[in-house]
Amino acid sequence: MFSFFKKKITGQPDTNTAQVMPAERPRASWIARLGQGLRRTGMSITTVFTGTKIDDALYEELETALLMADAGVQATEYLLTDLKKRVKVTATTEPSAVKVLLAASIAQLLKPLEKPLAIGAHKPTIIMVAGVNGAGKTTSIGKLTRHLSDSGASVLLAAADTFRAAAREQLAVWATRNTVDIVSQEGGDPASVSFDAVTAGRARGKDVVLVDTAGRLPTQLHLMEELKKIKRVVQKAEPTGPHEVLLVIDGNTGQNALAQVKAFDETLGLTGLIVTKLDGTAKGGVLAAIALWGQSRAATGGAPVPVYFIGVGEAVEDLETFSAQEFADALLG
Image (cartoon, rainbow, N blue to C red; front, side, top):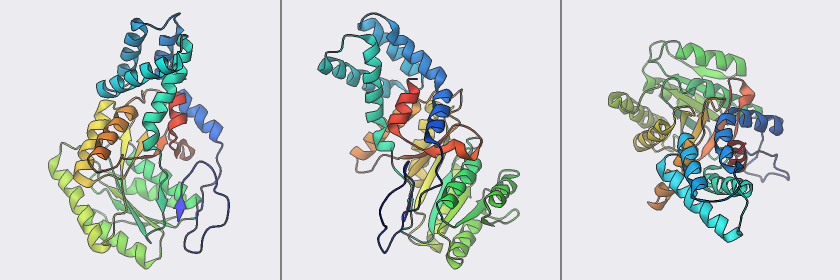
């Protein structure tokens, strides 16, 4: 089994599975890039803690800052309530110390979103990737392919995004760059491409089949139905699949990102997220809203939808595994 953690796993694998990690990348450098990407939000929040006392005015300013960071009303109220409890329990009197407590509160809220992407229980592991146009879906698939390849997994790509101009060609470039196979049809039906890819992946002994589906808005119901069709056809080719259904969301879209998560989850049953473009203009607070929504999902018998990866730029190394504590620290500068 392949798992994506921040550190290499030591010890010998058992006889049935093997844990193979991506090539080491300087984590400190990655954290610095994330902090730079969220710097604008961090400055707006940390300014709140430059006063001399903890009072209603401080909490009101913090409420405004969290709302401006795209945390949303419910997550903002949740964090403020939790923060006030922490201040009371710790008998904190210095505003600067409240910032540390807020970071702990955010990290705790986001912790359920921290989960490694694991493959290997099925061969091939079929990963279906969705997302609206412009979210960075195909680019994220290319970066994810590199992560998988670096960890020793063999990957086959399915160019099932046949609606967007040049999408097939874009994915082909990533296939060439990563030296992996690709199944593609000019003007082909997305479901047909997906079926052929799963069949080919099994025949060629691939570890992973990554299916790039067509980008669409959740309000385009006829296109969302096409996604359902792709999933059904994948299940015809492999009854246990798809084993992962990922949504790529643009970190710049604020609360609209939460609306996308809800809509795609209702349509497909999401198993994970990739959050892109946290590189200067994104505010980042929407992850708090997604985490709080995850709590309500868990309360009804489901589970939070984890954030497997976040991206801060266009380079391959700008996609990394998600850490709740690292994100909270970066968000608060």
